[in-house]
Length: 118
Image (tube, rainbow, N blue to C red; front, top):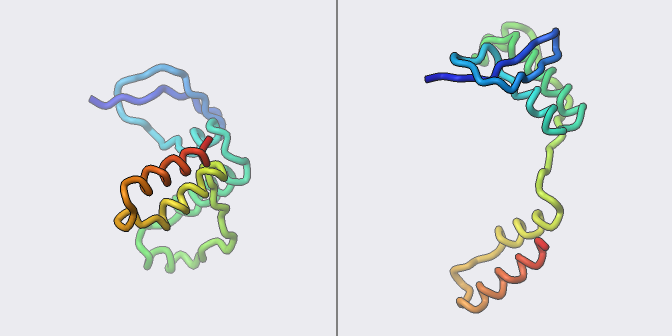
């Protein structure tokens, strides 16, 4: 069975009513959820711009070209959700060749990575 969360729409403003109702959703609320999650306003406004452009086009590449519209030139910001220490850990993990390490070297590396996260 299909259920969704009830919403109240007032123009662009959407309020989630905290009530689950039977049936499918009438709309996608990803941008509103992102706003609630605290993403920066410029990311939200860029998402709205991209959505508006996508809603105006057929999904095929040919139809996109027929419309005479070009892709926006502005490069979107890449959001990094991991703290700096986690980025360093991820980089070290990518560079680590566990097939060449002894079990004790693996264990020592694991402890070192954990220290970086604390």
